Length: 300
Ligand SMILES: NC(=O)c1ccc[n+]([C@@H]2O[C@H](COP(=O)([O-])OP(=O)(O)OC[C@H]3O[C@@H](n4cnc5c(N)ncnc54)[C@H](O)[C@@H]3O)[C@@H](O)[C@H]2O)c1
Image 1 (spheres, rainbow, N blue to C red):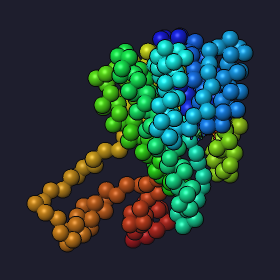
Image 2: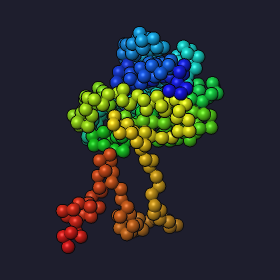
Image 3: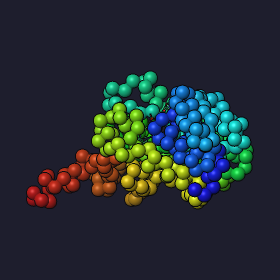
Image 4: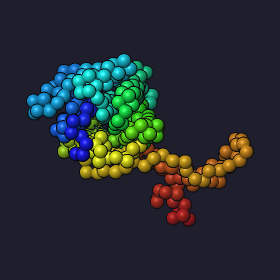
């Protein structure tokens, strides 16, 4: 893979699952890898395996949820390998709950890892890359769930935050040569084993190794000119995730009062409401037009 050999890359949450696979494949491509996981034993196991096969890796047990530890993690890469060229912001948590079942402590814990952890580690890496002056590449790990999924409100929101961060940082960092993209993976890991629904959409042959080539590509010089993108890979399928956008028609008046807002919805937006969530659920107001059995045109 062009331009990966000798690169210094940090992979967070790399003690198991997707992160472990990314770290191993990066090392096989000649990268020097900081294998981070809050579970240090697992990080050491992954790093040890890489070294046993002749690769270059060092383990880190820092938690990404603490800005000082996130900085120390990046510093470890610079101290060990003389630079940081890439970051895979992979560490993440997930649980299922309906909104009324949510517990504040669990919400906070998830947001700390999935949102603040990505921000703290990303900020530390960007500062170090900027100081080095020769650019770099960041791959964040978002999810198809960022479009909205039942029982995954908090997780979905955290991955939506990662998508927004990716777009914004790609805008900010282009001029200093840092590319920022995100992936939306699907792979058979501990995260999937915990959910019956995920297991149904993710058979065991969807291994993390099937996602790793995408991460290697996005970190490599082959991806020059590619930034600000969300790319989904679920094993067999690979595609770009569309960007949210300002949808026409954009109505204009000097001011909007409740009556004109109501009329805008009755007369214009009713026909422009969007199917929502990953399952593309049609809003109730539109269903009478889209569900064939109750279609007024058919029954008329
Ligand atoms: N598996 C999938 O199908 C899937 C789908 C979409 C997105 N993702 C995302 O991919 C990433 C990896 O998920 P996975 O399926 O391999 O999960 P996993 O649970 O197997 O691995 C996640 C790793 O992150 C580590 N981690 C948790 N908190 C940490 C912290 N504070 N600091 C450092 N490390 C920490 C865990 O110890 C664990 O080893 C996550 O961000 C997840 O949301 C996974």
